[in-house]
Every structure is written in structure tokens, then in C-alpha cells.
Length: 408
Image (tube, rainbow, N blue to C red; front, side, top):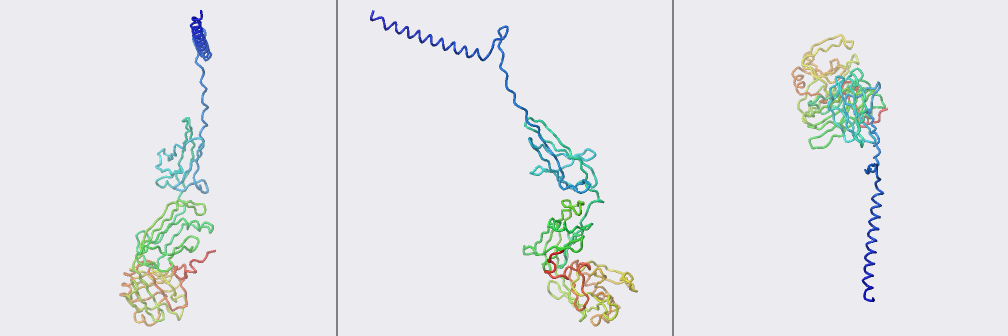
């Protein structure tokens, strides 16, 4: 008996193990059955899946930068979309006939046309955005471009490609007066780049010469060979609430230095080219013994224009004369010229007998005419009548300190 007990104990152990396995199996079966329920006919049902909440709808708005009075835009508007809860898809602009305008988007999402839009025309801009679920929303912005009558333009001197004298200022003339409060910002928008022959920049400054024009003058006469570029971004600025109609830009070069000194006391005009005396010309300036209106103005004049034939018509200023002359080089808007005067040759180099011009012989007048370029310097000395700042291009009658002084 004692030898059989171990075997009995092993069987009992194995049965216990087997019973335990069955219990585990029953427990697993119970777990599985709890995850599904029997349906009529013995079928089982699949558990329901919790659905994802929908993404919030995208929000998009669209505005045009700097809309002027009357709701009109620049010919080169900047359209700025703003998007929340989504991603910008883009901005599309169409004309009234349905044609799409070619434009370019910036890194900040803004849009501008590649070419200026038609003045006075109407357009529609549409900005679209998409949310995380792929739902697209759009917003439209109708707008009109300023018309010609309500726009402002800029005229520039010198002309593009022109070769000018060493005294020539840069002149920007606007087609309407600029309010004082807007002048500094307008000047800041102008891009002026100078490059002297040695690669350096030329020192200079802007000054308003009246309410509709601003001049840039170097501190001293330009170095010959200087290149200058000027860009006036009129479509990016407003003047008195009016948009600029078109951008303007010019590039010009400073030619040889032609600086003439006309001495009304010695009756001689010394012409220097690049610092060297090229010719000394006998002159007869405005007579000083009768009407003070005939006195030639002293101060720096600049060559303004040239005429091979010109009628000197004193009747326009209340004088009783009209004389046709040759080789007339204008140096002041008031009517002062260097011109041929064969009738006064006996007085040239001796006394002043003209109506205010610098009389020279026809031969000397032609030589000076051929030499001259706009912006050349003619500095008159010897009289007590001063050249005026606004008499043509009188920029050099002001010292540098006066030129750069604050303007009220």
C-alpha cells in the first residue's frame, strides 16, 4: 500500500491541472461571449465605432491695401487675405469680361497683378480657403481702379537716357499739389541711386520748390561721368487721397563739366570745359541805365533749352520790340538767353546794351549752342539783381546750408 500512494498523488495533481485548464478555458470563453451578444437566429452583432467630430469650418476674409477715397484702388493693388481654421488656396482676380488677371502671390499670402490694371476698370477678387476636412469656403471682393481724372502723375527731369550738365538737379513734378503732411513720406518712397566714376555715391538732398515739385541737388556740382537712376513708385503712394496712375523711372548720365562765368563788369564770359578754359567770349549784358527790368540777374543759371532760331518778343513782358535771333540758349525762364546779336557786336566786350540777355556774336553763339547741354552752369556776376530760386532752375542760388535747412 505504501508503494502506491505516490502514483495516486500524481493523478490527483494532473486532474487538478486539467481541471484548472478547463476553468481557464471556460473563463476565456466567457470573456469572448461578453464582447458579442447573440442575436435572434444565432447571428452576432458588430460593436459600433465612435465617429470623429467634424473639423471647424475655415474662415477667410479679403481686403485691399490703402483703398483711397471713394473706394478705389491703385492700378497695382495689394490684396491681403486672412485665414483662420484652414489653409489659403489662393486669390483669383477677374475683369468685368470674365478674363482672369495674371498676378503673383507673396510669401505673406498677398496678391498683386503682374501688370498695372486698367484705369477706371472694375474687377472682382476671390480668396478661397480649405479646412482639415477638405471643405472649401470663398469670399469675394469687388473693387474699382482709380480713373484718370482722380489719379495723380509725376513728371521727371532729366529725361531717360539724357546726358546733362554738372549743375542739373533731379526734378519731380506732380500733377497736383502735395499736402505738407504727406511730403516727407512721398520723398522717402522715391529711390535715387548715384554712382560717381570712382564708384562712390554723390552727396545730395531733396528740397520742395513749391507745393507740386521737389528737387534733388548734389552738395557740389556733379562729378562728370556720374550715373543716376530715379524711381518714383506712384502706384504705391497717395497724394491728397488720390492714387498715382503710373510708376516713373529714369536713368541719366552727367556729361563733361561746362562751367561758364559771365562778368557783366568786364563784359567777358569765360567758358571752361572740365576745368580748362575753352574760350573767352566778349558779351554785352542787360543795360543798367534805364529800365531796371533790363538788368541781367546775377547768380548761377543753368542751361534749360536751345533754339537755332528764336523770336525775342519783348511784347510778352510789356516791351516794344520783337527780334528774330540765331543760336539762342535759354538760361532762365524769365527770358535770359545767350544768343547771337550781330547788331551789338561793337558793344560786346565793352558795355552792356541788351534787354537782359547775354549778347554775343553769331559765331560765338553757335559755338556755345553746340557745346551746351541741359544743366550746364552759367554763373553771372557784377549786377545787384539776384537770380531767383524758381526762375527756371535756380537751385544753386541757395547755399548747401540753406538747401538743407528744415522747411516749414
